[in-house]
Length: 464
Image (cartoon, rainbow, N blue to C red; front, side, top):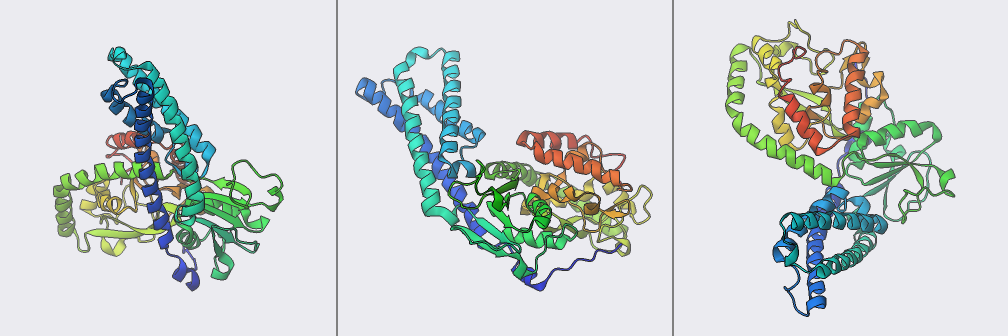
């Protein structure tokens, strides 16, 4: 089976992640860091004012140690409820509500701490509750200012919003970039992975993508938006008089939201921190194994030590994945159209051992370090991968949705034993079901759990 895909020159030249994508993300990170620092200062100021009001001097009504305990509790609570997120940065109501919840968490846990430590007599209850009230007022005021700052000063530097025009031209609202896909020759074709790759590069890093297209192409665009993993909407002109409650208040575009990114900036940072915390020590500790494996491969058969293959990554972008070569060089399958089987004569003697123990996957730790992959996520597949007699995306169009996050070295499907050849369509659909479940229910704790379970299934009867 041959894959026939065409990437128009105009798209190939244009399809690259622009500096605005990286710039907006850097701006948001700096913005949220400044917010967190400001929040700590405002909470401290609130209790200092409460102490001053109650006692006429500072330091009499509140134990300094208790304040030190309470401040980090507020930051943890704020992170937990999503106070430092895009949604809270553009909506005053959302920000104030999450501020109240974060304060409630911090003060509730602090009260339990004081009760358990039997230090209730060391501080003034009036100062405590007065400080809590003042803290909420100050933090709410700072959130109102922050939302104004984002909407009126930072604007495009904080939020990247893209209006995609596909045969249905409309005026471009303030703050939106225009992407006329017709002029670029980009057609939403769910059977063409190169089109998905180019579209992902064009709108990569966007916070909101709105598509204006004919009704007949809405389903294809919905798949494109879900695969990228952004806040994506399909413009529906008949909804202008209805104005759904979840649309942006400062935007004149009203559409149906068909996708939301499974991971916001906060969770992407947590996931990246977990990746680096494990990957860096693992590379150092596994260096002897990597060196011995490389020597064994070189002595066993002629050819390069590493095998490179183009695969589908985050947002349906294509990237190169590296593995230890486990097959005879003249018989390697760069398109991935033939899955390895139990008695595959393409596999070398060393290759059979390293595939059975998953050692062949270790070079992907370097890809995790570079940022193209994560330790946990849906496994990346080659363009030519087939289930039965059909390409993966021909079996189920939801296949593209699994790429809303970075691909992983291991994943939920793998720890469930769904590995090996895909001789039947069910072999793909079962893995796809697990991948979509992972996206829908992601937590950092689930990633840790999957990593722990991976150690149990490194040697598996379907690993060949």
